Length: 275
Image 1 (cartoon, rainbow, N blue to C red):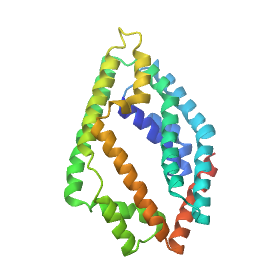
Image 2 (cartoon, rainbow, N blue to C red; image 1 turned 90 degrees about the horizontal axis):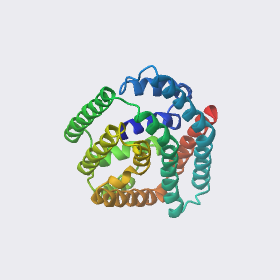
Image 3 (spheres, rainbow, N blue to C red; image 1 turned 180 degrees about the vertical axis):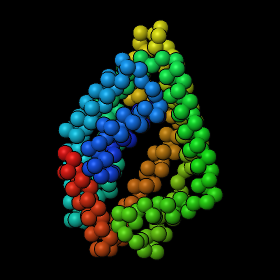
Image 4 (tube, rainbow, N blue to C red; image 1 turned 60 degrees about the vertical axis):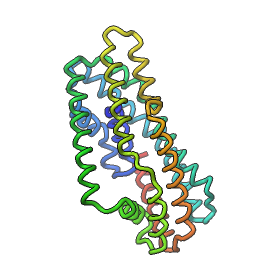
């Protein structure tokens, strides 16, 4: 169920990172994507479709203006060079709050649909999830052997926003990346526990009248299942990311700053086209 929630969330958020064509067809894309995991029966299908339509309408009306406000605040800070470390931290906090609101909004609906799934649908759902988790684990091993280093991947990502990085900026990235905590195995452990918990709740739906509420609570609060080591490592890594970005910001050249502002404008234009 955590995977199902992520599918919904990621697809709903496509408008923030892709074209308006994708966003404006998100209802079709979500329904198509979900169908890869569950074959809904004739009674469930219209409920699922109407629910997804309601989510997307809410997202367009309620959430997109929040994204626009955040991006405009960021643009002003970058343009005026009046950007403080607390403001940078606030950008991270606001981004997480966007995800949390989506989770709060869709959790009751996902739970209501989830408790109607029969044993065959549950078997299909978790078999597909487990297969994909296995594939991702295999891909991770391959990436470790063949792909560029973590620092190189991060620099490639940053260059999409600010253009080519200088040698001194690359050294900053390498310095901070070398301090990041490895969390892959901890995320795998968390995924196992999360899937097991969701399975137990869903299988209890036939005899536990509180199953629907328990499932909604699980979707909203599933991070409480994270190992303490993962929580600590994730917080430490977030602090390192913030420190790294804060160290790089003063080193931006005028051209890099213009590149970043242009990228922000690109997102603002996209959001305006779909709002």
